Image (cartoon, rainbow, N blue to C red):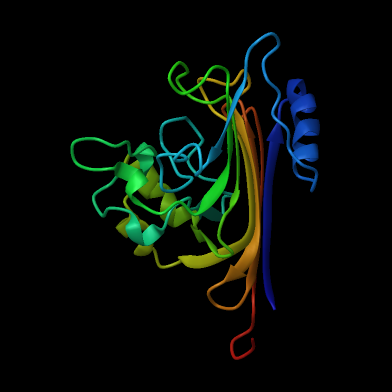
Length: 235
């Protein structure tokens, strides 16, 4: 087997507590969101009570250094909705594709994840939830891997389209049999950040494991991407 295992970690001493939280999140223990003291909390399950995130994939250029998980060798793109449904002319770097006169936006594509959102008061009052817990709703959630040195120029251009990613020579498509994400959205959570984990199979018969923890604009970041490819001719 050819095993590719690369990690990247950096942290400021003031964030050691956050790293301890990350260690907890990376275990199999259930993740719990804490409401703000003295504030009401509203939980909405998606897709039953909420349509879910109006986005196609965990890729964005809205927040500095928060584009995609990468370890300087590989980048991983987790899809919340069917990649085949992403409009060719939609800039994935915008992240959100809201409904409008032109159509339903991302809501027009099948949601491949499920979970719940925690709001202080509710969507009619708050700009965004303070916490979102997500897991795969299908046994083959799309996760794509591409060489970071190929994807980075596209991100630096300020726009990236689904066709750009599909055209990258290094593209390896994966299917996550297990995926979890805990998101504290920027602009609504006191300490914005994300922790996600995934594992599954690659289109070439190999396997992958992915882990990412990102807090407060990258003050703390830990990335682990492991791709194990089967030798040619073997299953």
